[in-house]
Image (tube, rainbow, N blue to C red):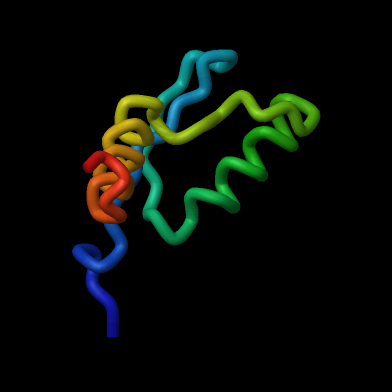
Length: 68
């Protein structure tokens, strides 16, 4: 059985709608696809918070030894 700690919330933003929300990590891709399809005719406007995305990229690159 999973707990809320196993599925952290991820901040997502849509500059076009001027909205921000948090959704469980397991639902991010579906939520972004659904929002962009319904609100923006499929154009990729909503996204994971860019600051968080950059932090995650740095952590992955560090973990893979790409920053050495």
